[in-house]
Amino acid sequence: MSECTEKLKINPALRLLVLPLSTAEYTALETDILTNGSQKPVQCWHSYIISDFERVEICRRHKISFDVYKTNFLSEIEIVAQICERELSERILPSDMRRYLIGKLYNAEKVIAPHRAAGTNQCKERRHRELSRAKNQPETRLVHIKERLGRQYHLNPATVTRYAVYANGIDTIFQEDPQKAEQILSGTVKVPVDVVCGYAVSKKGSSYPGNSTLQRLSQSQAEPLISGPSVKDMPTFDPDAGINSLALTIPSWIQSLQRTNFTVDFSLITEAGRKQLRNELRHLISAADTLNSLLEVESLSLIHI
Image (cartoon, rainbow, N blue to C red):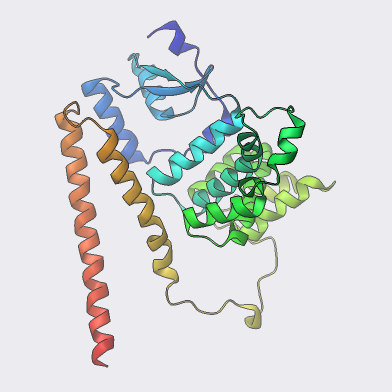
């Protein structure tokens, strides 16, 4: 392994943006690397890894060399936006992780957009006149950024704002207890959205929730830190709640499949990789057909009633 790759480091804040692989995914990746070597370059920015963290871990543990692709981002905030977009489009994410990434993306875009409109991607304090004029352009107004992200991820603009507060809350928890933040995002620990958002508010004030509160959240079923709603405050039953999340996620799967069609040179992929993907696609098609059949049966039942 080269000295260059040995010096690569992990930025914990950037690592938090990437959902760890499941045990099955990790095992499959390790088997593939041990069989075929590491064939995918790892993205880095300066000396920091920004993709394929498990690949690097496996290669280092087994002393297997891997290629590095050096990105040309000018600031860390641009990397945050790129990672968020990549993860949201390419992976099936737990709801808390998806909420966090959309919030982080919005917070990043609020910083990046004015500089982009002013003719620079650098997030630095300069060109004040250009920035002042740029702020009057539609894309740099916060409402337009929210609307664009809302359309992209099928959300109300107000929900995008709420997700940004949620992201700030997760970041605050991460500063106090990194493991707890990771557990919340992975779905291992369930914490109400309002509670997480409360951490973002407390960050601005003098009273920080602190470790005692976080320890209460670490129980197998985290206790809500606010009193439960009364019956009259309970939300109206939504019969579509169980399918809405899936319906909103599927477009990102389609984008990922289409991107693969146009960007991958299929003549270069290994037979093992080809078989693995075809097997997973068959499972996906089968699951989709089963679900579609259930929807058709229920639809016909309603027609005959």
